[in-house]
Image (cartoon, rainbow, N blue to C red; front, side):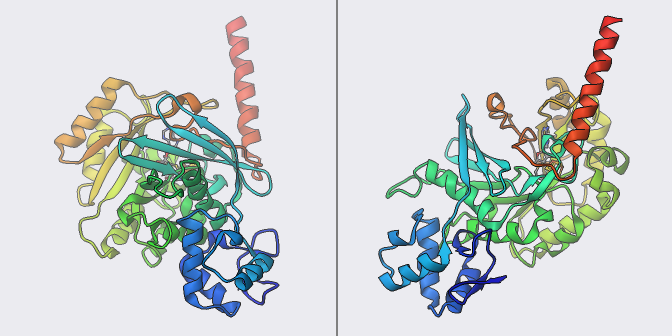
Length: 390
Ligand code: SAH
Ligand code: SF4
């Protein structure tokens, strides 16, 4: 929290002006109170920014000139910058978004009939290094701010003309499944998700906003105090030995602990019919065998779940292969016979590298992990050449 020129205090980014784009309603009300303004002004400004896409305070015609002048002096509406937009043959659109400091994150929009899902990033890179994920291989730079997270929704809505009078709402669902681990950037992610669901902002139903986590249990334990969005758990393995290999954070928070925490989250929600989505990325010969499916069915027996199978999407620096169609069908059949709702996520936007796990952006890696992976890949490439030529 930093004091501003106008006497208020609020989280800021880089400049001394407060970026109102990232403030959820309660914080905006607090900010307006701190500059001597009434709470209804905060609601007006919120609607201008998130329902009408206003970029400047001068656009806000139902606000007095004096207040506009004051806001111009001490606040701003500063979205991150779209540097490239890629459109896939299947309608998927990928945005490359530059955030302050120069790194680039990716946001993906996936249309499916009337539904339009926006896949939003929460961090620049990711520190968790799951073995099958391109983002993990990029290493980690920093957390995104609330304005940079909700800014992805704002920019996408703007690109679809959603803010125009009579503009059709294209973004009906949001999944926090882009780059980064949302629960390692807790407060900004919660602020941004609450803006997505706020009727004075985007008004997306809580059943259509999903946080996906690889299992940061202490943060998951706190989540229900701050939001009631849907929850997806990236499980990918039916036992700890295999999950330790695929999702290293499992060594710290093993499966039983994670599922207990997820159950508590669901039980704390006011409506009773919610289920946890279990995400399971199927990798050829690694976790796609019939016995894995049977073990998974056993493991989830007492947990209210639906299962989403994701065929592994290959990327450079990974030796894993996509599950075969036969193995995928067999895996799904076993789970369905065991009584689980089991869907398969169709791969979308592959021609623009927008599929799950292919998002890499451009990360100034402070962990130097990406360098290690590149060196290892170069080393492997040299070995391969040697083998081929000998
Ligand atoms: N960090 C969070 C959210 C981002 S990852 C998490 O792990 O849940 C979003 C989803 O994409 C996760 O289920 C993740 O396991 C999956 N994923 C990552 N790499 C993938 C790949 N190469 N192919 C298919 N799915 C992948
Ligand atoms: Fe991070 Fe999720 Fe990728 Fe794992 S799967 S490295 S937690 S983004």
